[in-house]
Amino acid sequence: MRIAVLGGGGAMGGLFGGYLARAGEDVTLIDVSQASIDAINHDGLAIEEKDGSTATIRVKASLTPLDVGPVDLIVNFVKCYNTEAAIGASTPMLGDGTAILTLQNGWGNVDRIAAVAGKSRVIVGLTYHSGTLIGPGRVRHSGSGMTHVGEIDGSLSPRLVAAVAAFRRAGVETAPSSRIVDEIWKKLALNVCTLPTAALLRFQAHELMQHEGTIALMEGLLAEVVAVAKAQGINIDHAERRQAIANLLGKAIGARASMLQDVEASRQTEIDVINGAIVTAGQRCSVPTPFNLAMVWMVRSLQAKYLGQCDKQ
Image (cartoon, rainbow, N blue to C red; front, side, top):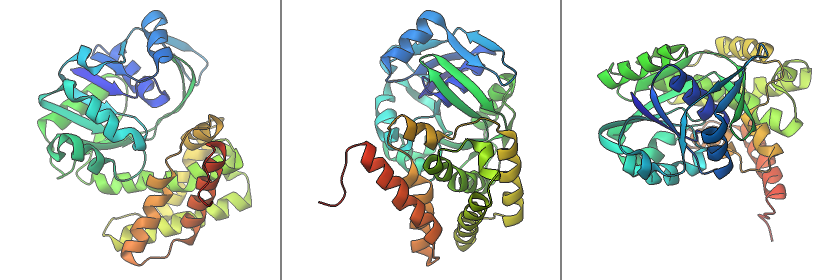
């Protein structure tokens, strides 16, 4: 397949793009970072594995979608707040049959992509892999897990089958789902509980399960996600999510949450499409979400401080 990865100079885009290229797919990493593009084109993409080994993968990288031309699949890993701009800039890569797979965090990315490229192009997904960008063209693969992808209407389309096959050839364990919205909300539950908590406390992933306070806080956040999901007809089992989150955090020794990486780099976070999405949906469904609202307030305040913003004059 001809595949373009948006945000390919970042941790997750580099990780997936690198594995797909190593498996023989025709991949181009697209990013706005000149330093990342130059490093990848000159030295290759280096991926550090959990066992300490490092693989250097030769993969194309570009700042300019026009130079790439139409592709079969665009995999979108950009931050949610850059979605419209990234998809808009990617129009030279859209052919008649080009699909756009979002593997981004949070809720609402389908609508953002659809507003620019049309809903019929969108495939939805999520992944439990985690990665850390440790320098231009250098990624640490800090955690492995299942990747779920699905059509919005639940169908098993030829393009979905082709994307799953490509990911599996790349060694990425991937499952097609006829209920992808349920799967996205299961992942959203994980992110709601862990990302702002780690970012505010500067905790590594496994440390979140080492303290009564963080465990209790995550339980409160999770209860609100489950309540909001059920009010919308989305199926999340509270006990299953609690255990799954505990298991994932226990295995993620040394992993640094994406929102923690954003805070450490003084970047805008994705709090509005993670905990903020729960607050918004809760308001719409008349479900109170005080834990999530508190996290939104705190992360927004921290973010405003390091970005030099002030909400109140």
